[in-house]
Image (cartoon, rainbow, N blue to C red; front, side, top):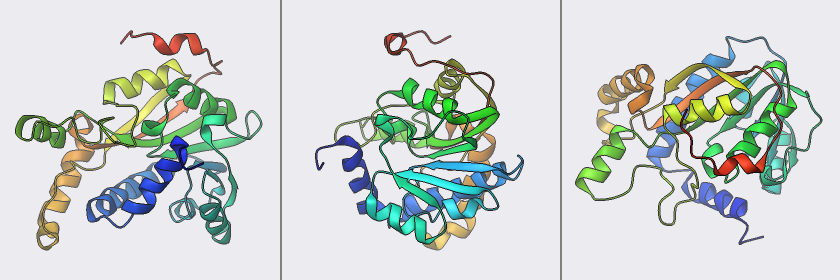
Length: 246
């Protein structure tokens, strides 16, 4: 199990959960996700990669369900009132068709090799007109420009050497992936710019960064997207090697 990609990704999260930059990004993502969920009717919500349920429980009054690859995380999520089970998205979602009103996938898509399979599974378990809410890094960000031009490094949060990420997205590619798998993008917002600064000046730079990222998602380091299911789709592995950008 130690060599399983999903298990290695879980280990990465466990080792970086206290990082200050990660904490800032998570806080912004949470605020935007909760705001977007407040704009749609409540119902049954599935959190893919629910971890210990700390974020999931903020989505009440939705009826909360979740999956995670970590048995320890699943046990902790259940204590918080989440109907969680242990599962690996690489094997598909262990639910019947049209089981949920909302699917939430926070920082999961970029870890998934079979992007179309993942999104098709999200589509499958959603009711007609159900909603998909997801967050993922954006490699076309201010932080990426600085890393490439000044440090000669790949884009921020990209699928680079020894990265747990295996897929890269921009606003354009994310919208394309959603459209290809039966979703219409409703709203897309940036969460943060990915730039570090001392905690002592967070009071000034924090609100400025949040406003710029929110209004200009194309240059943000993280994206939060709300999409609606517009029709059922069938997963076809043959199309995953197509390179069209239209």
